[in-house]
Image 1: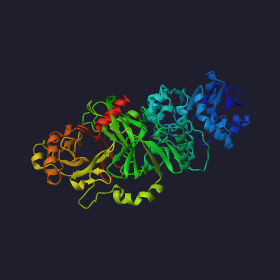
Image 2: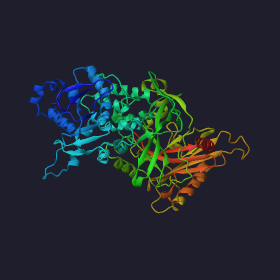
Image 3: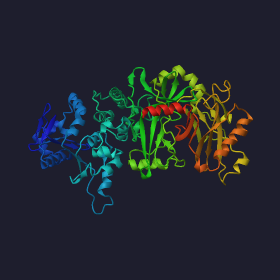
Image 4: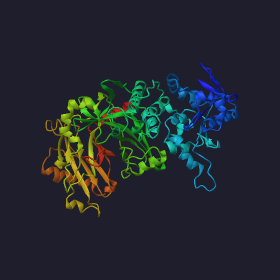
Length: 622
């Protein structure tokens, strides 16, 4: 490690474990910077004393002397960039060098002390500083425990701790990480990637190389390989040493790769993702030439080609008055026989609400085009999220929040080029790319619909019937009921509450009709009543014990009306959860679809047929 002696201004070299206490300089590069070769020539150093590239190093040396330190490290003059081997070693060591510094001086050359006539204050200029947009300065912000910010005139602005709230608003980085009360290493992969999502570098590969220290990774630098190849290599190295599945929690819409992300910007909206700290070890997942081998719980749908993989990470949402929600991240996958590829439609990620605090009864799952940006403050972005989240339904203490199974399934997540030759024709025929609505001159794509999911599978139950029949698309597991209540029912509702559509899904136990009445503990024939109200933009789900096999007119005239009478009274108070005997139905998560098909916004309906087993699992977990 080379260091500048702040008294003699000579560069000295140190080896091994003994490195003298030193200060370190962080800055953005200008058009002309001092180099190692120039600084080692005393005549050049003196002649260019007033050049900004030299002047800031002189000024930093002066600050170090004033702080009682004998040495300074600056990237421009302490690395011989003509040596590719030395440059590679320095980049792989740089995070540690910043972390071990006694103090880091951040020189903001574009932040000047405003004149009296100026309408701008220094903190506004601080927010706009180029330093917060550069790739390399992210690790220079995170690694040192002691940072002092200076203006162009070398006027001290404050420390990282003192300015932590403002820096959080600018960068989206957790305040606890800035204050040093939370280690960067315990943050999820997705969260750390989100911090770099809006930063830029001069050389395209550097957006990846600047992240090596943040993830504790060392790897060769291959300038010329391109940004996507470099970022792919980084992700593969992270997978080798980390069991954090949030590395898969990125938006496939903006990635050219269906398996790994192609740029940190794919994680832009994942700043709230945290490790789940589940009460079990995460099974290892590995990368090979076949794809990613993963062991995780699966949420099934009515489609034989579409499942949701439950990742071992959660997303936290803050709202007004510190109301908070926790959701698990689900990865939509397309394929069959435990071989899948990542889905681009109808949504690339789903945040499934599992822990709702306060009076929030539903959680809005996000899509890249509809979520608040994380680049601003946590409080601002989460307030925006809260404002877009339905707060109509009440969460009761009796609700079971997490309905997902604890049973793991071994799957292979691979590339489009491998899955499509196997199942492409079948999936195209069955799913039609989710574009199932025939939009004619007088028709439009529905605003909202229901996505049907089975977080514990269907067990001994089978789909039997639906009303209206044409509104269920089983091959994509979407139900968009269009039937309105009969006039006699609508008259009982409040004025202007008549814009309601509803429908019924019917499931039967496979032993229904084979046993004596009352022999089964389970509901033999069950109806899932689902309704949407356009006036309040609320929805509901209810379980109807149908008691006998029904079809045709009975399905509409008797049982759907029974559901109407239960819920159509006060749409603004509709529940999003129902529990009967050994069954649960919950509709607490909504998300905007990627392409607006088969509807613009979907509500995820979770149906559980084995409540008793679910409760046993939770009891064993303590």
